[in-house]
Length: 74
Image 1 (cartoon, rainbow, N blue to C red):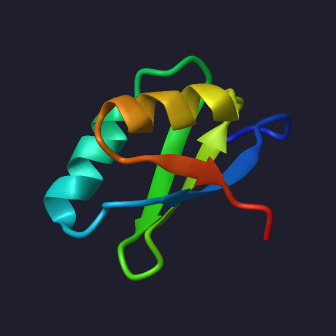
Image 2: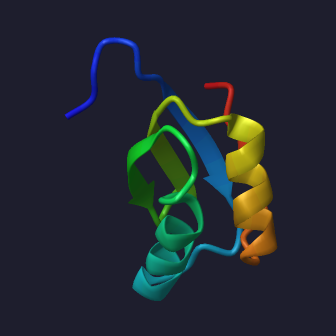
């Protein structure tokens, strides 16, 4: 689904504890410019975002939705 120019960015997303949280987080970022898809891991409280999305915009959108996020460097 993604093309060769899309990027993969990993985030640590705090307060993400259940399936409803995943829905809320996905809704917060799915309309961002360049967003293609995302995967979530509740145990690790992490998200992997696919697409040419500005990481700062993702962190801002998630923070505004009540899920503070930072880019993971691993």
